[in-house]
Structures are given as C-alpha cells and as structure tokens.
Length: 290
Image 1 (tube, rainbow, N blue to C red):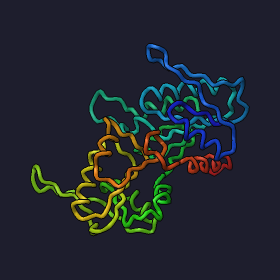
Image 2 (spheres, one colour):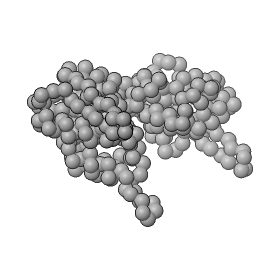
Image 3 (tube, helix red, strand yellow):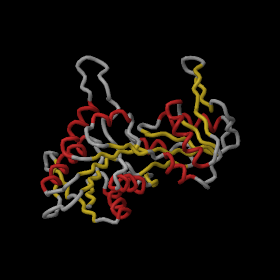
Image 4 (cartoon, rainbow, N blue to C red):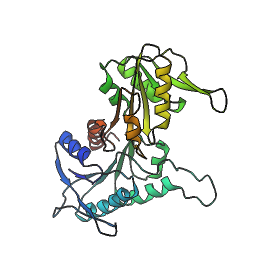
C-alpha cells in the first residue's frame, strides 16, 4: 500500500502513512498561469493498493482529486481508497428550489468513478455517502477531541445548539464530564439571551464543541454570553475549521481561552490529529471488517 498526499492534505497524509507503516509520496501539484491544475505522481508504477488523501474543498482541490484518481489508476493501482477529510458540497443534499442541482449527489457520482472505497470525517450529512456505490465510512472525531481535552481543566461540555447535542454528549462522556447544550431565547427583535439549557455555568470552565466553524459568529456570541453568565473560561473545539471571511482574526480578538480544531483542514489551530482514526479504519477495511 502507498499513501498519496494531495496539496490540500499533505501533513495529514504524511502522518497517516507513518501510522500505517507504508510508503508516502507527495503529488507534485502546480497551477498554470490561467489557474488550471496540473498534478503528477512521480512513480513508474503502483503495485497494490493506493490511498489518496485530499480535501474536496474549495473547488480547486476537488478538481485535483479527480486528476489524482485518474493518475493513480493509470499507474496500475489495484484498489483506490479516497480519504476525504473535509467533504465539500455535502450540505446541498437535496433540491430545495426548481432549477437547483443536487450538488452532493453530483460530487459523489463523479468521485465514485475511480475508487473502491471512501473514508470521510464528520461529513455534514452522513446520508450523502449513500450516493457512493462503493463501500464508505464516516469517522467520528468527537472521542478524539474528548481525549485531547481530558485533564486540561475543563468542567463542562456544551454544544452550540440541539443539532450538535449528540456530539457534546460523546465528548462529555469521553472526558467524564457533564454536558449540555446552549439555548437561545429571544425576548425582542434586539434582545437575545444565550445560556446552557439545564446547567449553571457560573465559575466553570466550559468547552463548546461543534462539527464545523465557518464564520464563527455564533460561537463568538455564545462565548461572550457564557462569560456574562459567569463562566470562568470558554474554550472551543471543532472537527473542521473552515474559518471563512477572516474568522480566525475575529476569534483572536474574542474572549476565548483557546480555539482548536482537527487537522482535516490545515490552519494555525488544527492541532488535533485524526490520522490514527483514519489508519484504524483502513486497517479494518483490509481485514474485511467493512
């Protein structure tokens, strides 16, 4: 087996290869002056299986993934496993208005043309993976995040809303801590109160956990509200740190004690590794467990 790193996931791919104890090669990817992607894998042949590690966000990385799949197949790989740490377009899983595409389905259908297995991490909507005909598995990062923060002085775990309550539960149970969700109560057009739904955060160090942070507006507002409610400190962790529109700069000026995410996307705070999680899934697949 060989692990091939795309330009969007180099560090994670290297770490994954080390965990699996197999060879690693970095795809030589550049851009032409007009922005088109060129990539090459500097091998004469691939004997056995290949694992391609590459995000499909933003669009340029998706195109690179398509080209890497074709290059790996042409080099003779027997089976191709796609590791997509952050799957772009997973949120558009249905048509809401006439004339819209079913974006998630389109992406799966095209990626499915040249692979035998797909691994994702905390995909936004897991049902999207059913568009793949090949075996697929979505891995959950919550236990790893919980292990990372264990022993770091956290007193309680919160989700920003009811949709992420299950994730907060897993992190809380992993850490042996109480968990809750934030609840937003609107009193008027301008007055909104955010607080834990059932627990008192006064004097406690709180960890807010979510799957993805994009602009960060909701998390920043929640952290401010928790501090006003008497929380001794607020930390934030997520799987995917998208951090669009200079979100990291806004976080730098907030009252957060810390902000961390997994290395599914590479940025200044992606210090929680999912490499071992992915390696275990690949070992399970090789053993015929899925």
